[in-house]
Length: 212
Image (cartoon, rainbow, N blue to C red; front, side, top):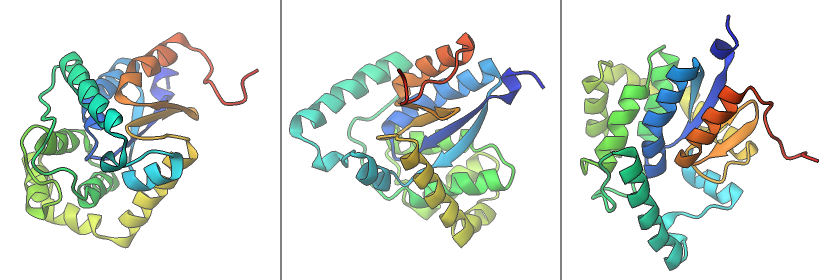
């Protein structure tokens, strides 16, 4: 096995995050370029915020809420993606949609296309990502057995893994999503995909908090 093929990146996300949407295609491209394996880890985003100092959008200072709109417009232009700054169904509970990504991985299916569809559903198409029917259609659209995946997503085992991913994201010191963790070095935000790429291609050792 080559060194590149041995690379693993823990990919923390929630399908409700616009920044995870903006970073999704770039991190997929990075994986293709480097041969890295993405380990998909959906996270209970509001628990991550509570543990590591983030705030839900409505609780942020007005200046930070306004600045977020500027950041989203910049990133939207940079990434060349459609993105509605005020989607009709936001915020919603992304739990079922997130757990379907776990269930797809458990079934040996690649969740990437479903994830892209789910991101676009909320951020470009004004669809309700908390609606079971919408999620079922997204699964079917990408070639999956919607009934089987939804049933698995409702299981205690998948719920436990969702919680475990959240605990792992908290332990990795990620303040928000998306987060990419390579050999315990965290990269927070869609605008850190390029920094992750440089780290992988440079051959350097990962950075840690015990630096001298």
